[in-house]
Length: 278
Image 1 (cartoon, rainbow, N blue to C red):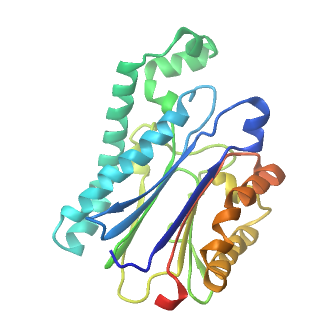
Image 2 (cartoon, rainbow, N blue to C red; image 1 turned 45 degrees about the vertical axis):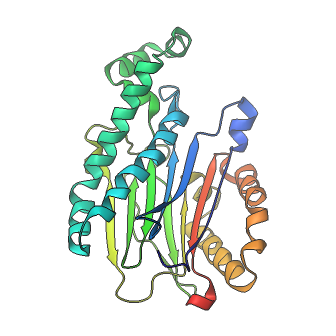
C-alpha cells in the first residue's frame, strides 16, 4: 500500500439515544488489506427500531464481514478480474457471510422472552418469520489501493470525495427511494440486489480526501451544501494544519452535530493524502 494514505475514525452515541438509554448502534472498522497494500474503511448503522433490537450486534458483524469479503479482492490477478468480482460476487458474499454470522449468533444466544415480549403482535410475527431483522444494519465501505478505489453502499449514509482543489463528488449517487427512516438493509429480502458498487481505476490522481459517514451526520445539517462544506473543512484543516488539528476534536464535533441536529448516532471515517504527496 502506498504510504501516503492516512486514516481517522470516530463513532459517538446520539443525543437522543443518550436521553432514552439506548446504546450506540453504529460500528466502524479501518483495516489493512492485501498484506498492507490497501486500506478498508467500513461503517455500519444498526436500524435501532423495536424489531431490530440486536442491530448494534448486526452492525458490528457487518464491518467484520466487510473486511473478510473485501480481502478476497487481493487474491485476484488483475484489475479487470477485481472489477468483475466486486460488481458480480462481492454483494452476494457480503450478504451471505453476514447472514451466516447472524445465524451463528442466534445459535449461541437465542432470542430471550424479554426481547420478544417487547414487540407488538405484528413485530413478533415479522421477527419469527425473518430472525435476521433483529440484527438489521446498513453498510458503507471504501477500499483504496495503489491502482483502484472501490466504493460500496447498502442502505443510507454518505460517501463524499474531495479533490485537492476542494471539489466535492459523490462516487455513489443517493438512492432516491430512501426517505425519512426507510432504508435498504443487510436483512432485506434479496439484499445483494441493493448493494451499490463502484470500481474506479486510478488512471490519474486519486481524491485528496474520502469521507464516509452514517446518516446521522448529514441529517444534522439543513441541506446538502452544509454537509458538503464539512468535508471541505476537514480537508482544509488536514491540508493546512495536519492531523492534530482534527483528531483530538472529532468526538466533540460529532457530539455537537448530534445534539444540535439529528440526535442520532454519528460515525465518521476519513481517508486522506497529505499535501506533500499530492
